Image (tube, rainbow, N blue to C red; front, side):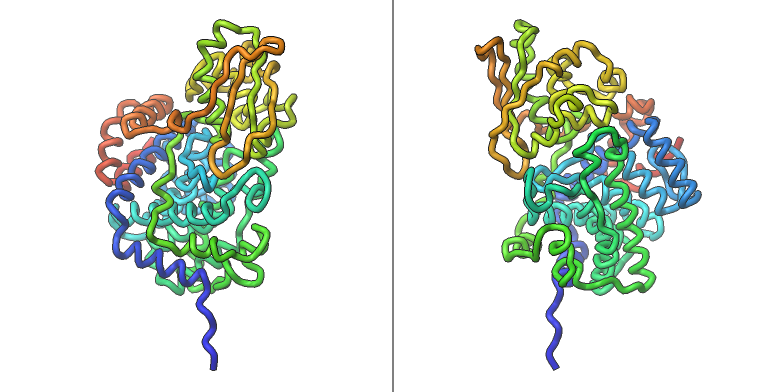
Length: 452
């Protein structure tokens, strides 16, 4: 009798479970606590948005009430709370990002882990470690895919596609699942996979602001089903109809398999916290616009040429609609509009970048003078943005993107947290919540955050 080969799901889940049981490196715990704090702050800042109210109404109607906390106040069932909290973390498009994988890990993983933790008596360290490992799994999948503007992965919200697996892993670890159950958890998450990117490529869809929520909820659901004994397919990652074959243009290459199984590096260490509430692909263009503001003030009638690659070009076309976005989500996904806004007003902020910007004549006037220049090389991660101010055929000023402009140290992350709580009307709680989260008291801080 010939033994069946071990599936990639089994290899990967065994390695992740061993890491969880051994404890993640302290440097990753420290970083993860910072990202949990960031997610809680931006979730609070989104609590009173119209989209948040719509999501809450739909989830309560469909999944009912319960005892699980909602960021900003209220309670719902475990699945509903996971969906609502994940939506809150992403609505402002302010949540953390793994640039090479082009995905937002924390919005998917944190809500699923916290909901699972509320069902079990686990300590805060276990919660932090489960978030770290769920995030790491998503980042590994993103690195294996290495998405660009065209090719495998370019048509998917990889946050959503991979988020089912990351959320399932994080929740499954907190629930205490062993390797066979985690393999089933993977398979059950795989059976729900979705994330087509039309909501990002087209205009008018406010649902773009909540796509990680589907993955967070689905991941928790997979973990609960696996705990109850439902057996999911073991070949979710490398079977005949696996995720890579169906969704990502072919079976795993040897490079991709090595990326998933090489535990000599933590890819989640490269997850960044965003400085501005807008799509990450627009961040380099905000940065070059900020650098060009002084020159623009001297030449306010100049045309503005932005150089783009295939990835950034998707956020520029159709140009007429991108210049005149219909919704705030459209504006945050529009490189022409975000560039114009930064030239006119400076950094986009929670208080400044609100619905009235859609009718800001000064911003719209500049947006109408945005020109596109194709030809930048496409690559995983940031576009190599270039902004040029032009008068006639003469270049007045040229700015090239520097990735260092997007990096936040802990002091700036704390300032962002303070601003989010101010925006939410929770200034009184800032110091206590920040200290609790930085000390790893995640579950008590989350309870406070869920108090009205």
